[in-house]
Image (cartoon, rainbow, N blue to C red):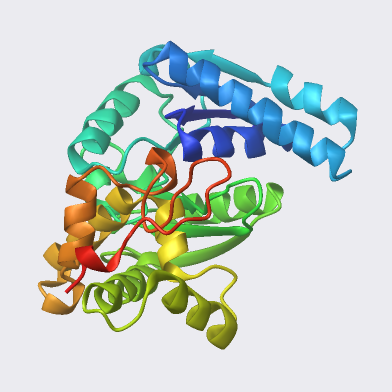
Length: 296
């Protein structure tokens, strides 16, 4: 497999395109927004520069990587020669179902259709196509060029040969694949999101402050990043969406999103992407963004 199409040129999509191209694959990066595509290419260029400066890759590989990436505003055109399509659009069920219906009609019959979803049912996505046996989850971690894990999720109908192919493909990217089954949150977010939610609840209830919560988890549990800082990097809207999937899927109140998280998302305080979450993310700022007045 050498021809890869990536749908969605946001943070995850540009990272996925970068990694595939860097490892010798021909990549078509697809997004309806020309501005988003231009921004994605600029981001990839900067990230490659960083790797060159750190002597992780040779200078020549940077240009070779960029040369392997083409862009397209049309799903139909962008996937017509693909051997694998990786969808990395916004974490929205209806949007993903619509995209997979389009991919299914336009991609070659033997093309594998993968989704980078962090929580939405692979089986449900696969049911929107006429090839559920060739639909699989390929959940990369952020930042994609750095993080080694790829969580591979089998849908109910996913063929073993498709799973095996995606496992080998992940290894070709220098990643470590872990195969799991299709239940709400899979493994990564079924464990991670309740922890983040509990950290937010602890803040909401006034048990400890932002820095104290993150420091306890970093120094006491050897986490490289505290749960509130991590939530800011993931995006509080994404955290809320995943918790809602867990809550709806299991019907268990322990997965109910903390009211503070809900309020922050409604207020547009989404973390790094908006410049403010539990921390301020404006250049040079070290301030906390959440004060005690927001908590019980």
